[in-house]
Length: 299
Image (cartoon, rainbow, N blue to C red):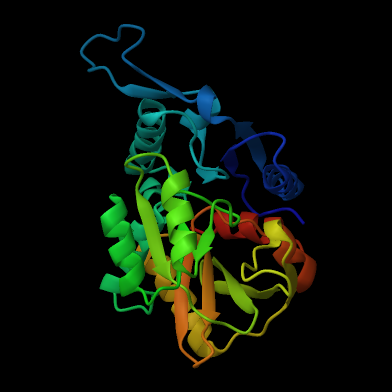
């Protein structure tokens, strides 16, 4: 199908990425000009050829970024502190001048920091598990006790379940303390007993797609860790909760993870502002990349 109006789309990510390739293919199939730009290729210039009586203006590089109607971010910025700040600020200035950036840099910043995003959701009145951030061994032990002696420790920045551990007894806490880098930040979240599954709700504007993630061998249900995906028809309350979470974080596209405890309480576990959809597509059907492109076509 060809879109009514051609769009110049830049996808920021790695050319080898599955999602990047699918979006570019879908965009070109709908008659758009789609270009992949890697994070290290981004640059700016202030000034340039002398133009009399005109102040220097910032230009973005490569040229396709300067000319883009929309920029889709497919992957978080890599590198050290300077590189990450420069890349996020560049996206911010692009957005400020009117280029559509999805997701906007502030929503990326909020979502990549698990504690910050949960703090924002909690401040908005959404249900989240009790959480602590601590840095000293004494504070970490105290946080673990306050969480009932059963907690999940997560990297503040991370995805696909990597680096997540469950601290269910004192020996587990001491092993964690012995292995962690000195003065490293520890993010602890209360373990939510569940029935072996949680939900990933994929928010795309007002549209919400969902799947159940299950595991019979691990308390973690992440697909990357061996969990299995199956269809899920979420309730209207769950759909509304996912939309609210995405809206609080300012994300037009988001992956919102919900879990129901054995006592029936529902919590937002975390949010992802660069969500994957490979497993989701396998259970809901259709071409999600095409849906993403259609979303980007809307004003």
